[in-house]
Length: 384
Length: 189
Image 1 (cartoon, chains in turn yellow, cyan):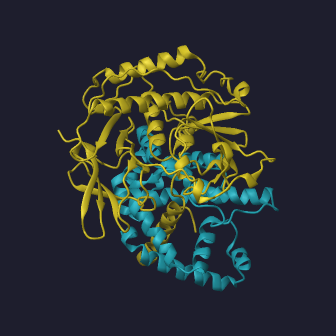
Image 2 (cartoon, helix red, strand yellow):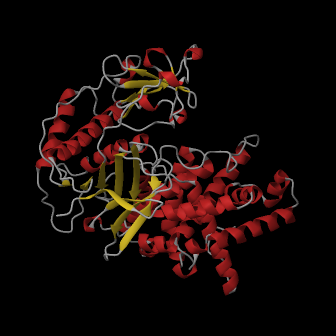
């Protein structure tokens, strides 16, 4: 197969050749899904190679590390939204975000890696343990959330849209959650960027890291909402003292004695694996009491992340879809993968690329279609 | 697929790139970088190499955008084929430099990116492709993936699969025919 356009075939041959290319391209794309985020320095490097000026487009952040489901993905884009090239970014919240006092939390470095991880990356990284820098950034973010949008009409700016269950009114709690989301994202981002040298501690706000085997062996994780209640579902082995061993990745997760977090690292070679079990009776049954929540986070470049959290299980055989509109007012529906939707409290994140002509301002619903033909809206944008 | 491409406006962006409109390059990158990077990563199984190939592809797309003819195909396919050529070059170079190295055969490495993000825009298309692939015989899938992802010649593929070159070509041809038929809703012009 050649990489350039087909030579001068007659029409049927050319059509067949193009159809084959298209089928192969589709197959390749499908085999590559879900997607990984491209390196953030790719575009500047390309422009430099082409001797083009540096673009004024928003800078992309290296967010693949936390491109997990749910809040982590949302947190990631939140950082992207907030840390715009401009000094004073503008965030439009729908509904309006209310001010909330948030105490900057101190991230406790992993005990075993603190000496190395405390060293900031020269020149580019704000040290995590610099309380002044963290406080300053949090204050700036807080102010930016309070400030009403002042961008001229037509100017691209980040937009956060809250999704609520039908009949639910937006509340201060919703605004608080947006702020918490941003604050946590900032903190995680600072933490992640400050993790350098041989040891690196990464933060997971939520979701399950089943890809840790691909990381450097000196990486450690701090998981702020470790799914301990789902250990059997996740295929973990439970040990004494609340430790969990992931046989798929070889990672050992231990409760942090100073917080509710868990820390994860490659299990030491001398670990007594016989002390870990899959026994049913040791499972701690948790009750899901969280409220469904969702966000549409649209960056200044037009890309939108959809983040759904704590959604209720749906009947077997149901399908879930997003409904929204394009710029002409025509309805668009996206099917949701159905692998996880029978689990209570499932999360999902996905994105709609820039340039897709999607107009979320016209409305957005997350709808369940049951096998019996029923339909139920779980979440939607707040209608004025 | 073509509908999706039209919505994404890739052809228009490539035409604007051909006219040396720098903003079009930025827009094209915003839309396609993750996809092209993931596809390169799938083929090369090497993040660093995939990042380099992404850059090479973007440079080549910019430099050769004047040769893009929307009447002959969509922008996504054209971009993917340029990327594929660069990936194959990289794999062949790797094979020359490390003749004993084992190539990652498509199917031997997990598809997609664990923890990656769902591409909702192409979700239905991707589901259609995956279902179409599942409907093929395993041997047909192997042949197609080998033809798409591996740098060896057809004769080498045939030897690896224990087939004659002619038999492999026939199998690939038939598999492509079936795949194209199954994907007709997604690939019709």
